[in-house]
Length: 183
Image (cartoon, rainbow, N blue to C red; front, side, top):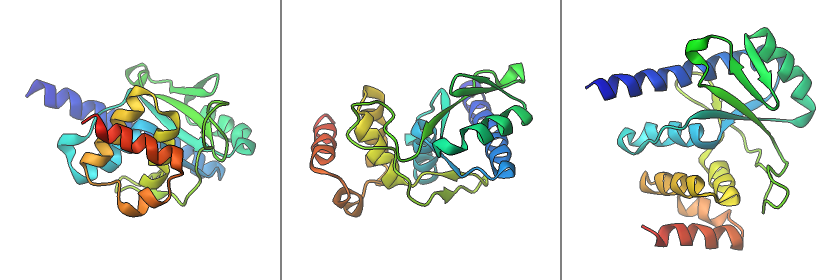
């Protein structure tokens, strides 16, 4: 029971930090969306909460030319900048780091694809997240162990559809098939 309370508090903390960040960016007119493990969690949680796996941070994607506006919005909203990461100043929320990645750019120089920029979807909590198709592309591009686990979570929840598979390049489809073979 105590574990559930701690987990629920952590989820609420992530949602609150995400709402604060999204509100600050909305006020500044900065187009953004939640990506990464937190976005995977939100999609999986909506379908099957038992399969949803918590992540230690929040990744947001923006256009590179909006970085200065995002920086100003975050600082006005009570976040402290540390490189391309921001932390909410409240010490109780210090663990909720926000990391920025840029839309239409590779996160790492040798990535197979840039960060996709499909139309984001709004969560019931009011903030924008990348659609599943974008997350599948991102996770298969990064392809670290944690990305492979996120792919498994999306797949187990039935979120990787035949339509999404059709959008994958040959190298990404090969990676998806490899992840599926490890189950």
